[in-house]
Image 1: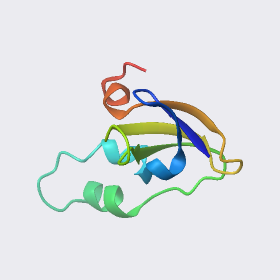
Image 2: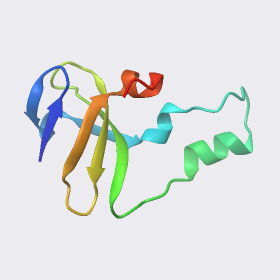
Image 3: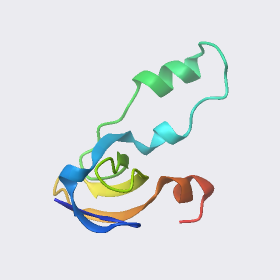
Length: 90
């Protein structure tokens, strides 16, 4: 599988580490335990099909990326910097 890093270009997926679903970018505001934290930490959908995930480019530019990928075919549909995605610039 190849991932096109916005900073480094087309790279082998072994340079990246998948870090989970994109919802990890939206941490709850609560400071202590709450149902929101329980949901954030423990409840995840595991869809078959298109999903958005966080990947870390540890063997490259060390950027965090949001990768839109089909979990059935492993086709990469879109890659963007996670910081741009969080700001809504994508």
